[in-house]
Amino acid sequence: MMRLQSAVLLAFNFIDIASAHSWVEQLVNVAPNGSFVGEYGYPRNFTDKGIAPFDQESMKWMLPPLGQQPPFITPDNLLCHPSQHDPEQSPDYPRLQVAPGSIIAIRYAENGHATLPGGGTGLSGKPEKGGTVFVFGTTDPSREETLHDVLNWNGSDGSNQRLLLTAQNFDDERCYQLGDQSPLAKSRRERFPNPVPGQPGSNFEIFCETDVQLPRQMEAGKPYTLYWVWQWPTAPGKDANFPGGRDEYYTSCIDVDVVEGLVPAQPLHPLRQQDPIPTAVSDFRSRAAITSSPLALHSMPGFGPVHATERRAGPGKGEFTAA
Image (cartoon, rainbow, N blue to C red; front, side):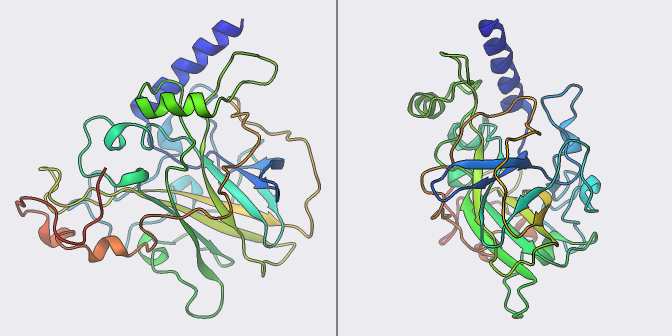
C-alpha cells in the first residue's frame, strides 16, 4: 500500500511540474520557534488540486493574459482571478485566523521554477531564484483592484491601508517536488526529507513559502486582505520571441480574519495531498529578495513595449540577472 501511495504521489507531482505554474495553496501561522501551528487557511474560492477533476485555470491567474500584445501589463489588468474578485471562501477551505503582528507562511508548489535550470525546460531570460514574490496588504480591498495600482503601494500616504509587506525570492531554498529529477531537487530531497507521518521511508514534496509578518496595527474582529504577487519576467534580449522582454505575473487574493489571540488547534481542513513538513524555513524571520522593488523591472534598460519589436544582441547594463 505504501509503494502504491508513493507511486501516486510521484505521478501527481510530475504532472504539476510538466503543466502548471504556481498559485497560493495554503496559509499557516508560524510560532516563534518556527513551528507551523493551528488550523490552515486558504485563498478566496480555493480549489484543491488533489481532488479530481481539477482544472488549474480555476486557480492560476496570469497577467498579462496570453492574448494581450505587446506582453506587458496595462492599467486595466485586474489583479485578482475572476473567482477571487469578492471575499468569499469555498466550503471546507476557511480563512486563516491571525493575530496582529504575527508571522504567517504563504505556501505554494514550486513546479520546477526554483529547482530546474533556467526556471523550467526550454526557457530563456528568467530571473534567478524563480523571480520575486511581493505581498501587499490592505484594510480596504476593491473588487476592481488592478495590478498596476497595487505595484505602486508603499504606504507613503501614511494611512497604512495599502502596504507592501514583503519582497522575497520565489525560491525559499528548501522546496522541491518528487517528479523533479534535476540535481538541485535531488539534493534537496536528501537534505530535507519529508516523510508522510506513520510511513517510514516515504517522502512528500515540500511547498515553497513566503513568510510575512503582519502589521501590528491590524484591528481584531475585522478581516485583512493580502495580495500575493509573483513577478517572473523575461529579460530583454534573451528570447527572440520577446526582444523587449516580457511581463509575467501570477497572483492570488486572500483574506485573513484578525483575532485577539490564537487558540492552539488541530488542523481540521488539510489539503487532500497535505505537505507534512512541520516547520517553516530556518530564515523565516529574515527572508529577502534579489529584487526588492516591484517597480525596478520597468526601469530596466531595453525592457518594455517600446522595445517589443527591436532586435537586440544582449541585455543592457543594469538589467536583472537571468538564471
